[in-house]
Image (cartoon, rainbow, N blue to C red; front, side, top):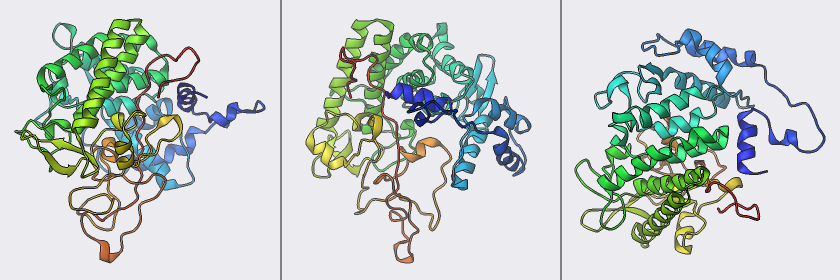
Length: 410
């Protein structure tokens, strides 16, 4: 079963196992089984901000749109529905259509309608599973088609992003080729804008840490032009995705152009941002020296590449699972000898306000398939709170189409 078929079955709420062997009736979950979760959430406190879908209508909206999920671990099941209940709060109607906000209350660094592009890729990645495609379609249209002269919104490049990757992955889930191909031109314009504003003579991109959506960090600053592994990983993924979209559109010259951009960027990241002595990717400062902080924020778009050098493979200790998913990424922070998730809060799991925390904001990722352990008293200090916490990040889609023999380039 190929990846796209698997995603379609998942979106339909059916197990792939149901399609193997003798025909059988798939088990269908009863939505009413999960109503109590939403009723509990609605009763937790006063609804301070009301956007398109108020709490009173949350269950009706979720029942129509959210893939149903059940789990023997009731905490996980509750978290799943709480995530969608919260996600729904951010759906907002504007004169230009629906958007998904990052913050419920207005923030000073947002544009009109409290719109921010920082989490756009995450919104698309999650929202692609909704049964109603219009939420994400209108959000994408807002950012890519309602700016000056029908172009990009002027603040779309306020933060680093991977819009092309997210939209391509949406196509893998919904199969709407026309909707994806329609965004080829604005995605190319977006890539060109980044090249014009952030590309250095070295062929790599620079970015401020705050504009990377990562707040302040050891390896960055608000007034420096450091070459960060994060944004270069995003731009690699975007180039790969644009090449794939161009292939779908039948535009082979553009596909070749962006395949070449991706290949060059991948090579530069591995040659220039890999610190051999630290055995990991690091930010390159304006001085030309490494920041000496192993960059836990490297996006999986680069890391899962099958062509990475042996020295990179051994340092990352990455494990590719089914469909090429990068299942685990181990990284160490400066001065901390063992993997874990750094935090100053003791004896509790870290809360995750936004989905990008799992890979982009936490200080460490470790082996997949293992649970966070309770911290013993002697190990209660920042940098040792959790160990062996798994993070999953979906691979960037391979380029559209297959080889003549039917195989996919991974």
